[in-house]
Image (cartoon, rainbow, N blue to C red):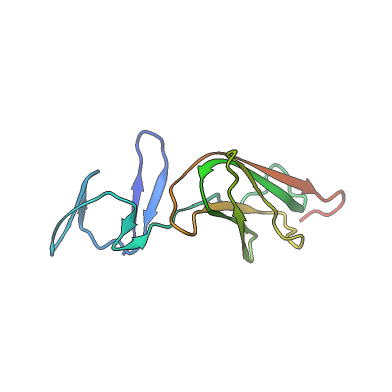
Length: 145
């Protein structure tokens, strides 16, 4: 079962997969087998993998675009994963975090679409704080939808 939660203060929407609880508060969750305290960095001894994904968008014009680079401002150690999606396919790219807090990921050169979506995830379940991402889009000088 999946659960979708709306943060009423920020408007952020979160979906929890494999959620076997019937009731939840900020600190506790319950189901038929009992009451559980929420917290920590693991879920049933497994790392908690997070993913942020935008919706598909034409990003200000219907001209086809390529993505030379995506820049991240985030606090994180280890590996990050950039996802780039077109209407037909999703591409995932692992990249190392830099100690400076500024990291970059270079997508493959073959991505070329009028509509794109972008995502970030922590494939090892490490904690992270994403402050900003800048997406470098290059428009085709002549190709439209």
